[in-house]
Length: 266
Image (cartoon, rainbow, N blue to C red; front, side, top):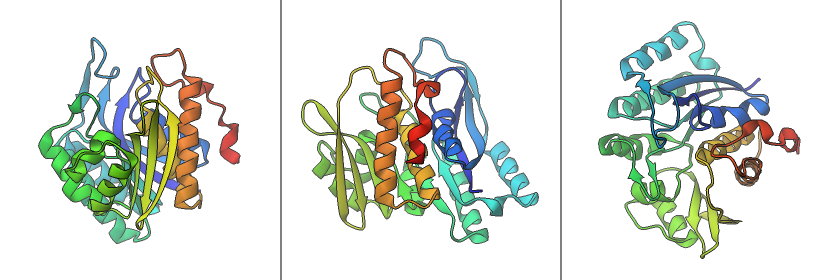
């Protein structure tokens, strides 16, 4: 059985962070070990939100315990998401390097959760810089949205062509960018691998719930871990998010239980 370590936010009420990332991984038969960087009652965009940050020192002890118990070398992949501080991002960098010392073949997927349109950055700028300068270069795959790709590449991204050019500036071999503008009524997902570019467009919808980026990263990583090509995994993730959005129509959050998961076997 494949195993993955997933590091991101745990949000109790809304389907963002760990829950939409983990769901497709587990449905694909992958064992997930999750470390939360924060624990929140709900998405911070709602009127009220409460929670706690798990300090980097505590997470360092947890990862050290995983290693002491002999488990750190049993993972096939690690996926990082929401990292709210410099300390969290530098801890992940150390952890990925240590995991590669133990298991050189491990896959690292970096979902660089920095911000979104129209809000901009929603983590500290210094933490975002560590993600850009330390984590993205360590990653085998990065999955930024439009805002994140623009911020990471330090250039404007307003089209699939812009996204491809921006992705090529990143020190990461595979970039799967999402939510890229593509005309007045469409958004594009753009895959850049070894200067090869693939573009897939979807209809732009209003009131899409939060968490689709997390869901995309989960689908993509699950497919890669089960032996698919990068192109197949990317197409699969694009389709999976479309199913998730369709199942959630009329809701203010992703409705994972309503997704028809049977298509995962295709």
